[in-house]
Image 1 (cartoon, rainbow, N blue to C red):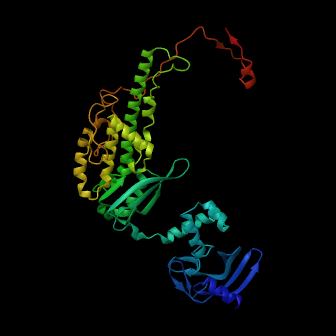
Image 2 (image 1 turned 180 degrees about the vertical axis):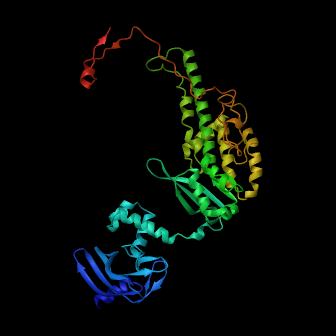
Image 3 (image 1 turned 45 degrees about the vertical axis):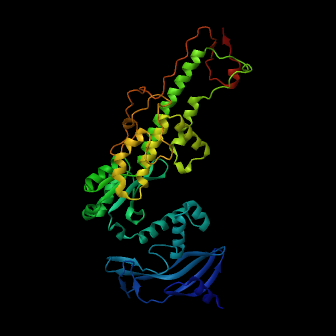
Length: 438
């Protein structure tokens, strides 16, 4: 089989045939001949008039360890539609590209799964070439019809670079969360650019917009789509509930720590050495145990390990206020687990009442009753978020005004030695030679 025939079958280039193959130190150069006689502008206009002609090469997919270059004559034409001289479009490469379509499609596929630096090392091209290829492929594959028939959309920001660089991402909930628009920044002007591109008719047909609790997206939606219902996404709403649980956990931890300090002060100075025989075992540090209940209260019940489940069972058996907080959070999370969305209003109306009483519908554990182990619990309406508004940050009337008790200052002691420092910066040697003044 001739080399030209073999490369014709391997490359399968549309609209061209292989006229010659040259093996060079830099790679394999494949010469191509065009079949079409008419010149076609990238805008679609065609003509037979040739403005001028030149020789150009395009990088193709590697053949083993050798690079492959396609070389062909390319012509320019005077396009009447564009009103200027343009280079003709070739079927094996995109307009303005020095890489073949197959090469650029592979780069675009890899860019979805790995970073640009790794792609440049794998395919032996520059980092800038990878960035330009991604731009061309996205511009060609981007369909304007993606902005048609948008009824329920979601808006959120994502960080893409160090230094707080963000992108605003708009997704279509009716198409399984398909991304329909991306803009740089996370301000109201960024989302406003999307609404302007959507147009007045498109904004009028938007029925619901899910977003976070920031003011920027709400401001843009109020200005461009005032008829759309604004919804809070589950991630940010449950994050508020977790923040409220953390606040209650710190409150309970401070109470247990104050009780331990008071008991230690009543018991007097601690005895040194081994405890005498027959003495009771040392009691557990309750404040430290309450402090380390954080992940048992915040994690999804499906992801709890055995020790974290044991923590929840112990909180339930002790009728702790933290267990009631966990029940409130899981009752709120069940709002997004309903099979029928029509049941959401009924679930939302009965969520605070039964959960605050100690038996939410979603609780997998028996109903606790009796006094709490950490004293009176904070009211649910003030410590946890409600569906209609954000969580209140006011402290309950029976809770101390500060979550962390102020640390006691060390009493001044005139009889303690004072460290005498020299005028020069201290070093390890000078610290060893430092004298103490009696």
